Length: 128
Image (cartoon, rainbow, N blue to C red):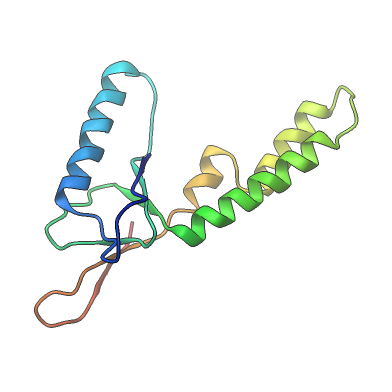
């Protein structure tokens, strides 16, 4: 995950940002060849310039990140409150699934990128 927290007013993903993400993906594949991953960029708004080739890059904008943090806090609170018993691990897994904090659940939190307007002035939305 690449976090872009100092994007300023423009706030969009640039080719340089995407290049940084691709370098991180290459590093990850080299060091963890048997693992799968989702390239994710966390930034204030899920916007990219037209020059960016997104490929399978996903986004977490500020609203999605806040929701993720709120749900993680609630899930941790619920797990801490579980009684100590043999079912605790299964109950904790159920809570993580309920709050979409499993790998599959996290993938449902990604948002679509909006590409900065082209010459016509109309934004283009990229779906995954």
